[in-house]
Amino acid sequence: MSRNARARGFQKKRHRSGDRRIGNYRLRRKVKPYLTHLRLPFQFLLSPIFLWGYLLAGGTLNATLLVAYLAFHLFLYAGGTALNSYYDRDKGPIGGLAHPPPPPKYLLEFSLVWQLIGFLLALTVNFTVAAIYFVMFWMSIAYSHPRIRLKGHPFGALATIMLGQGILPFYAGWATARGNLDGGAAPGVILAALSATLIIGGMYPLTQIYQLDADAERGDLTSARFLGVENSFRVAMISIAVGGAGAVYIAATNFFWWEAVGLAVFLLIFLAAVMRWRARFHSQTVMQNFKTVMLLYACVTLPFLAWIFLRLVVATWQA
Figure 1 (spheres, rainbow, N blue to C red):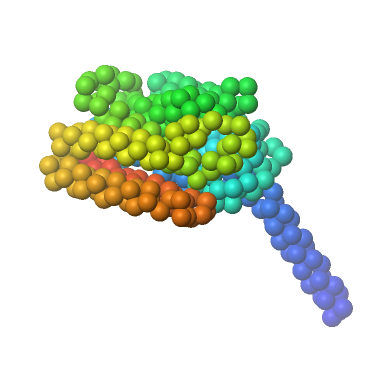
Figure 2 (tube, rainbow, N blue to C red; figure 1 turned 45 degrees about the horizontal axis):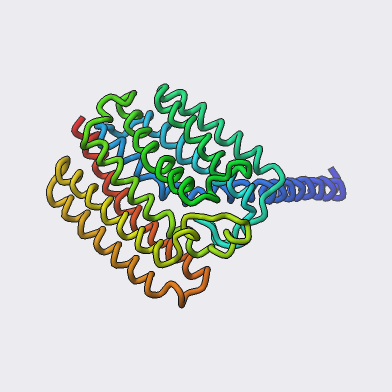
């Protein structure tokens, strides 16, 4: 083969390689906004409620847990936030996303298909888990869709969050471990579910108080707008304190006493951090308040999540 022929062949390979890189780059640019609106890191912060129910039901680390966890946290919650982004079209910071990109053209369809995949996964776990998933899916529709828009009604929004991120995922975790809801009506179990729900309910207004102006522009009377900044902090601290006390009691009656003491100390430190933010709130910018609440959310979630995981490791080892 002549030198010129080899050179032409080399150039063709370079062109093909360059075309593939350009094609991959364009594909990533098209796909990235869809994945961004799933807000996957934020969904991880919702994990403890589901795993709390799973742990208290006697669950261990296994494939069934993984499938159920992915169904709810990778697909249901993430698809629900994408659905909400489609209707809200936020321009400022929102939960888990400091700079939301414009919703891509097919975000609505993508969010629905994404949640359908999760439902198919839930069906492989058991009927009870799938039924809870089904209810939570329609709650996410009611929360965001303009014709119902529970997000724009303070009590409807709070009820949706406390059910959809509190009681229902707790019992989804319980049903994942046991196959059904047997034993779920015991007083201690109900207290455990309510304690987690109160903490979630207390945090909810705090995730909205930095975006009051944006919600007002949309005409949404959110829980934070209804309560106002000061009352949002008061409700949050009372709710977290009461829910935390319930969680400490459950930890004391189900695990070692020193674990309950550690949980109590952690919650007191967290409440002190919320009070510190309250004192600084009005002097901070929207972005600073957004970063503060996201940091607080991570601080209240990650240690609890780590403790639950260690407990599941112990339960698996002892099984």
